[in-house]
Amino acid sequence: MRLARFRAGDSVGFGVVLGDEVARLDHRVPSFADLLTEPVTPRPDDPRLPVADLVWLPPIGDQPEVVCVGFNYAAHAAESTRGPAEQARPTLFARFGDSFVGAGTPVVRPAAEDSLDWEGEAALVVGRPGRRIPAAAAWSHVAGVTCVAENSVRDWQLHSTQATAGKNWHRSGAVGPWLTTADEVGEGPLRVTTRLNGAVVQDDTTDRLTFSFAELVAYVSTFTPLRPGDLIATGTPAGIGLRREPPRFLRPGDELEVEVSGVGVLRHGVVDEVAEVAAPAGVGA
Image (cartoon, rainbow, N blue to C red):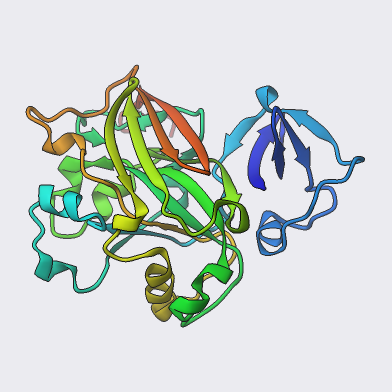
């Protein structure tokens, strides 16, 4: 089952993707979080909306905790010059929910910055709440898997040893277009492939993660309660633009695809930010 959030005209809704249509369920399910906790089978009388008429929104909670995992593929850790000793525990950082757009909406390259880099990933969307979840029970707390373009503004990421500044530019990443429920997608391995303008730039499988899906859920839930709609992005494969010779970053007009096998394909373009110019002192006073 594919669960999605969307905008239809002036309204925001959620439902189940059925081929070229979405069965809208927000008229009888209280919230998207409730749908994640207990997916609902569409009924014949549920409204059907053409996918072509919808704008996808990230299939996560309204105020999600977003935890991202760095250097979780050995090849990416190696290209980033991270040694094995640095991988005794997962490397984590947080993202703000508004740093993401939905599938089909262009991400924004910040004004006066040219180091927006791609990072395709598989991500877990939490379905059942929990704290200190054992690894053996982790999958029962996962609603499903989605695709993430966990893009980074590298110059800002490298301002310090903390990644926050480079990872949270407004509308710089994307999630979606939907999540595929855990019972359908299975625990893997899943193939994660990133294509830039049709050319493959990243390709790996989740059985090569240093820390598995279950280990990540257990580790993250130890220090913070997980709630329906929270997101854990599980790491990006080798092949980022920063490590190419010469480096290649995202530019306006580029088209990026992140495909996770059994889940779907997330597509987005790139546009430049229209910088807001502050009014001169006294203007508008």
